[in-house]
Image 1 (cartoon, helix red, strand yellow):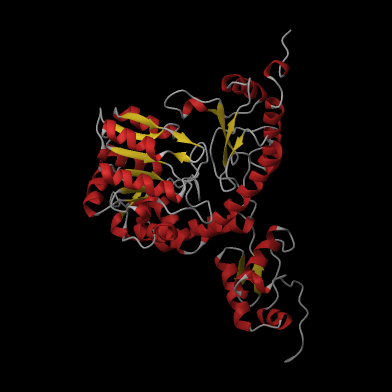
Image 2 (cartoon, one colour; image 1 turned 30 degrees about the vertical axis):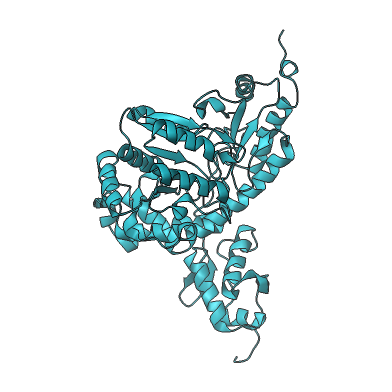
Length: 465
């Protein structure tokens, strides 16, 4: 009967501060699905009834339901209404154990079933949008124009507007580094890097016969004066650096140091390879080196740490069109091309906002794990950053990295000792991957073992009979 008030079985809890009202309603749907208040197959209130109950216009509720449908949370049934979609996509987790392998540096799993479904539904949607051609055709070594444009959009917040012609799509950050280093240097040449550096760079240099020269670092990162001294003595072919949430120390270079390093590189004509693997994790990081010296910097923006390790996609931003041609040739000669399927998944996630949602979820889970680490590990030994999902543990005397690693291995906990990163004398330190644990409980168990060990002297941590 017209004008009759309809009782509704579900009403979202929203606040005006939650942003646009239609998004707040869609977020409430996702939240209530995840927390079990809206089970699989539940029927949502009719749109007009919900609008009336909330005192808002019908269009807002319609937009909210469409947004929830786009996220893969609900489905419309002709003549019946809108229903919660069965959650075929769940977060698969290995069987929980009491301890964990913390040697891998992975983004943490997040508990958001609605977002997990959205990720998988976007992948499934490529079949209808792209057809068989996506699976059965090669692409240009530097990536299709559509995927380059998505890379420009993803990096815009950090680098500003970049012509897509300066962006190449690479098979992960390692593929981008291989193409760049092999273009800038040859066997016997010298490349500078932080004295404690990414093990993947060490492997590449050994493979290519390139000498790495470690530049001194401190708690604030690479020291500009030490870089200048190396440039004056050795005329390096390039500087590789990881200026934001450095792996493994988590140091982030200040703007002052970034400007100093750029000025030195310009003076000596040394190209910079900026590995910004973790640059998307902080909400307000310092500007990348590539934004301070775009004509000098080869910027590698990988998706493995900020979105999904499974994609193996990185965006390589080069200084100019000439560099683009050379690097595209290097990609062709080494890895051939990035996976078109992985590139299109990344493009779809970026274009429809799924990538931003996943990044926000990773940030939130990272913050929770950082809190656990801060509560369990001694402040004097722990070096980390609230935005990082790894930590650098400097060992108290008389512990050595070898002895701690042996004890942890015996307890079932794996970490990475400093030898993997150091070009010279390794410090007594280990890296902890806080994201590898499948749950916060698993992380607490592993960190508790570490804390119990290092707060006691090595002699009292074991018993020899």
